[in-house]
Image 1 (spheres, rainbow, N blue to C red):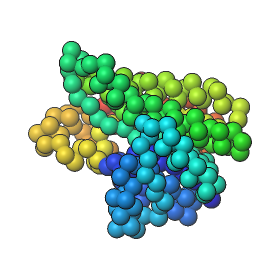
Image 2 (image 1 turned 120 degrees about the vertical axis):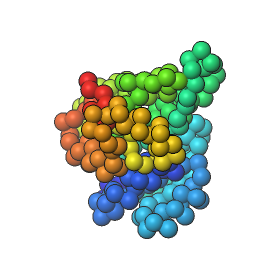
Image 3 (image 1 turned 90 degrees about the horizontal axis):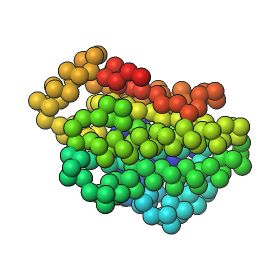
Image 4 (image 1 turned 135 degrees about the vertical axis):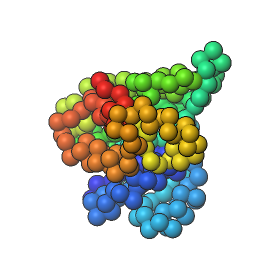
Length: 237
């Protein structure tokens, strides 16, 4: 049984996709800052998962996380999902504010990827999947910082894919659009209607579509260095 480590496990998207990852195929390892609350959520919704509390902006806590994963046999599949949203006009954005955002949205993935690769290279197998956003390709007003963090993540994954291309390890990114899960549930209906006008399919995505992409990237040994776009046609390469 392969181990999946899903970061940002307390977020809305993670809570939506976790029940869809079959427990008979994978052991699901979740991490978030509020581990106790996530463990209670998993128990309440009958999600079979192990949970570890960690702040991924702190190197020592990331190291403790991966020591914990070693007790289950290490990480076979890393899903870098930890991230926070941000909205501010670029002329109001300070370098310090951007730095804080990059710590969560970008450097947390760097820290986790580095430690995951240590075990993956030894096994000769690994899958690294980072979660990006349509906003990295089609920014909206006030998203310059968020766009920068996700664009950096996509570029990093392409570089990683080259470094491990002969090691049985793939590195890819999933850039999804507006999904019927997570933060979208808190958006007023009038704004939702306006967003939908910019989606050719005239509908929001479903978590099942993200999980289908995850399964594809796990199974495909010949797909690496790619960004898969799931956005209903909102942005086209």
